[in-house]
Image (cartoon, protein in one colour):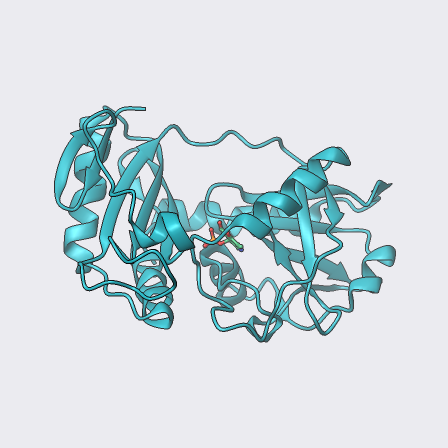
Amino acid sequence: MGDVWVNGELLTEEDARISPFDHGLLTGDGVFETLLARGGVVFGARRHLERLARSAAILGLSVPPHGVLREAMGDVMKANGRTDARLRITVTGGPSPLGSDRGTAPPTVIVAAVEPTIWPPTTAVAVAPWPRNERGAVAGAKTISYAENVVALAWARERRAGEALFANIAGNLCEGTGSNVFVGIGDRLVTPPLSSGCLAGVVRGLLLEGGVAVEEDVPINALAAIEEAFLTSSTREVQPIDRIDGRPLTGTFAKADAAQDLLASHWKNSPDP
Ligand SMILES: Cc1ncc(COP(=O)(O)O)c(C=O)c1O
């Protein structure tokens, strides 16, 4: 996989060592960010680093200053000879006792860069039978406890879908396992509000600020009548949905195209908005 940055040091994957007692490994006590770089430019770095700090605050973790993490991302891309990369910053509770209590060791901080994921131009989605808990202690935080997402995505793949969508406890649309979701309702493009329990996605935020969509709760049953929808994430950017639970959508993808144009203009004019 190449070199990784661990606690301030650039190391080969073979030499990088995380304690078997790391609380992230033992309990999922940690937060992360996934970022996309093109031509050496990390898209939305400030927004990602601010969200990392917000997620860490929810868990009571501390994160290194922005400058340290920006430099680490640059160093790890350089060490791997990549200007285009999928970057991941992970901050965990560090070495700890074996239970839910965190120890007194400093957090573990890892920055890795791999090749960007190539996503299919469109995707099928399946609605997972398990809810997102919008009232949970870590709702809205990007924690490394992704086991629910792993199970839901595997479930979706068994149904030939590339992403699973979650409803929340209230029965409203929430998000995907690694994406936010936008649906066309009449003339409007709608995405669930943060109170649905979804992550405050960086791409989601840019589309809302750009005025192409509004926040609104969408009852999960309403998906049966949706004809246009797409997913967003930093690595997918805008990915139109072509099927929901096996039903083909007849939309034109016009709303997805407008959203993608807005992102493209950010890449061109203000990639770190
Ligand atoms: C659960 C979840 N929701 C939404 C997103 C999209 O967020 P962003 O646009 O910041 O990549 C992600 C990103 O991986 C995610 O994991």
